[in-house]
Image (cartoon, rainbow, N blue to C red; front, side, top):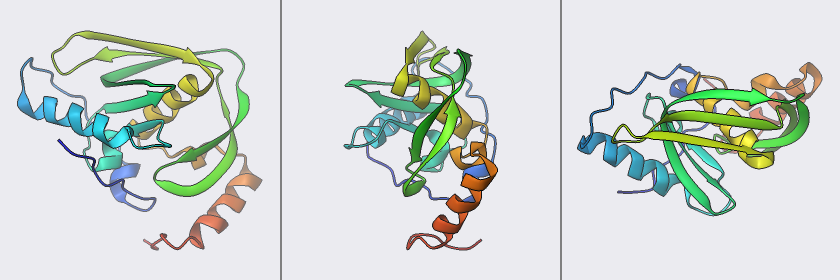
Length: 167
């Protein structure tokens, strides 16, 4: 299919909780969504893309961590370990990285476009990406999890970014 344009901070689709996907094996629309998610996550520097980041309000995301590329429909997140501060960025908030708490281990279970079970887990960047993308699907951007002082600094910087458009 095609790499889709990433929606930026301020786009209402990023603040809305996504809808569950009714999976029917062989559905060409679901196969196309999976392909678009994969094509949108494979450019260099991308760890994950949620469906709402490409303007589709459905519970799906793709990931690209250490050469492992895939996607999950209707993900259910499980986390473990004491949250740690990690630097995090987002394609929808380009050019910025801020420290926020994430669990050191995460697992997502869901299905693929044909209804087959998908189980993805990991530590480090994989754990961070799984949590980040599931937050997107719940209508939350990573900046919402920042400490208050850091969030104020982040919002000030974002409002000055050349791509920012006031709502």
